[in-house]
Length: 159
Ligand code: ZN
Image (cartoon, rainbow, N blue to C red):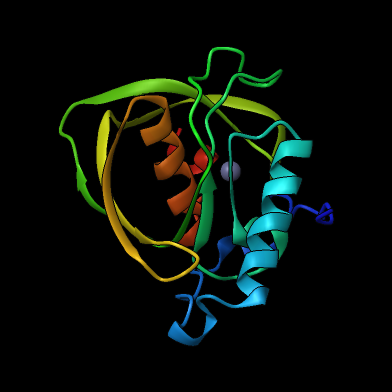
């Protein structure tokens, strides 16, 4: 069982930092696997649909995107959880949409945030394989929200 980690809250410095790239030597390591597993457990326990490493006090560029219906997001589409290391948004669609967002680091606050409808993202797997893929709608929103965390930005700053 992976441990449930404490989640940094709005106002804490760790959430304002630009997170560091995961280094080549960290791929395929037990450490990175355990970090991702603990982040997944922490996100699931709190009914999140995404999480970024700085939220658990690790200032590294690693996120999980995991849209699925749950008590916090009853209308979320179901997808397999994706762990993205060093994610980079290559392309934002011109078309945008507003949607409600919350955040495990900003409890009891929701807001309408304008995001690109479609994003093209490049990331590495935990083994270092490079993947390029396109997300649309709610999963695209999660990707943008989580990548923002890696750059020290909270959704409340985009309202
Ligand atoms: Zn968040």
